[in-house]
Length: 344
Image (cartoon, rainbow, N blue to C red):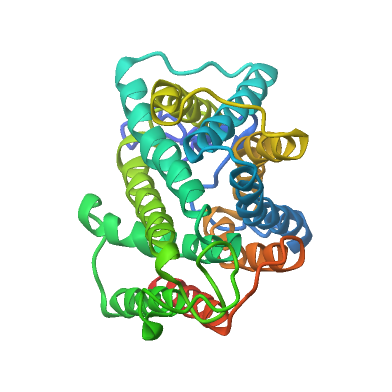
């Protein structure tokens, strides 16, 4: 009930009620409680959404440049997290956003950093030693379905429905199509294409890389569900939480990278530039751009970036890296995206 004289909401007994405040998601950003577009014009969010899809879709080509230059997968992941953390930390400093200090938040950040950054970034780079960036990018589109699967386990509010089950089935068919299982796992390397992936399917050399890419998507699925339940609401600033998360991932990788792959080496200016862009832009500033899309259009619209992401690895890999694109890759991508749309 409102108070016409003061404009404050009051209870029936006259006690004032504190007004609801939308949670902040970054410096100067807030998400509308309803998560909708709020009447925002298409031009207000579409350029940002398309830019975000290009950045994240292009990340697979940048990873490929790094691993082809001889950078070990764990070092690709470390440089990616380090440059991303520095970019986000700079954003927090400019916005005068303080990082959380309580131990519980740091502990959850360490878990989220492992699930969403340290482990999957390493797995994806390892996978791209054996498969093309095109294949890796399409495998990554399985992430929403993996998130749904883990959500059913970790989030009490999630329920398995017939529509979601059908979506998971379509996604599984898409993965099998990407693998070209009708050729068997030991054949089908017709035409090269990233060491072990050809127009006919995944050869024996590419099975490990394909499974690594799939394992990365399941890490993302577990991480997103964990974040939603235990981490996302621990601090009003998503920029601060993101900085803490990627900072923890950087420390985790720094502890194991020398032991797993030895000391780092200079990969050359081209690969170094690719890793810098991959980290600062793809892992750092892309978070801020994503928050701006959420502010203008809401999280449901922002999630549509997943549908466009497989397009860019395919286009960039084919045009710039001369990677072959088999019909099974296109069909697999269509089935995965159809599964995502069905399961939503």
